[in-house]
Image (cartoon, rainbow, N blue to C red; front, side, top):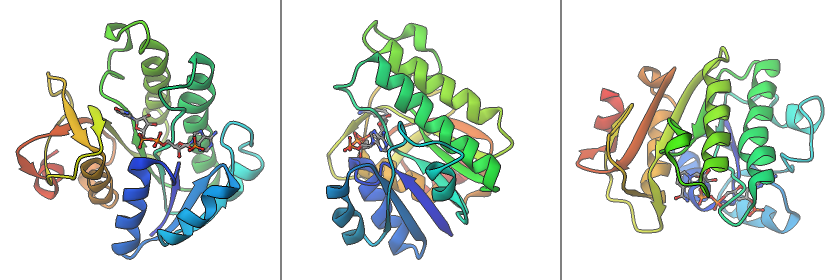
Length: 216
Ligand SMILES: NC(=O)c1ccc[n+]([C@@H]2O[C@H](COP(=O)([O-])OP(=O)(O)OC[C@H]3O[C@@H](n4cnc5c(N)ncnc54)[C@H](OP(=O)(O)O)[C@@H]3O)[C@@H](O)[C@H]2O)c1
């Protein structure tokens, strides 16, 4: 498949890009700064320079998705950003790619969402703008006609992956999961037809990733 990964120099996304390339996919790695281009090339992807907050669906965002089979939204404004960028990036950036997918016939869309997006009001005051942005982006994707999968991990760590996870629409607990395991969930989910139209939470757990995804 030809897969566009938004936020390709991000910590989770870099791991995912390498996995997708290893699995034989052609990856377009979307980044917003010129100095990030060599990293993306090193990972085996074709770099695309594009700022999702600046560019339009009619312009560069649309062109970036043309000819793709799938889009992975793994970008984000990050914890040091304020409420305004949660709106322009975590919500707006994701929605631009949904609209571009709809216009250009890209059927598959995978969203890196977050545990807590199911109920933003229950988050802390500090987390609410982020969770609200994620929740609304997820809702926009759910009401699109796309073959979507929304994955909501708990707190991300930089530990090595264990290859074992717990997944369910609602896990009923909070916890952690490594970025490497999240990347592996995305790589496994990409072509798993049983995940189309599904939204689920993910934490480090007890079931091998492929088995857990097959059962979702
Ligand atoms: N941290 C957690 O515990 C947690 C938990 C659940 C879900 N999540 C979600 O998981 C995502 C990935 O996490 P991570 O820690 O791997 O991410 P990360 O390393 O912060 O990567 C996010 C990427 O998005 C890019 N980006 C920001 N603004 C952009 C724009 N306008 N146009 C294009 N790209 C842009 C960033 O580029 P720059 O380097 O140029 O800023 C960065 O490469 C987060 O964004 C978050 O929504 C996080």
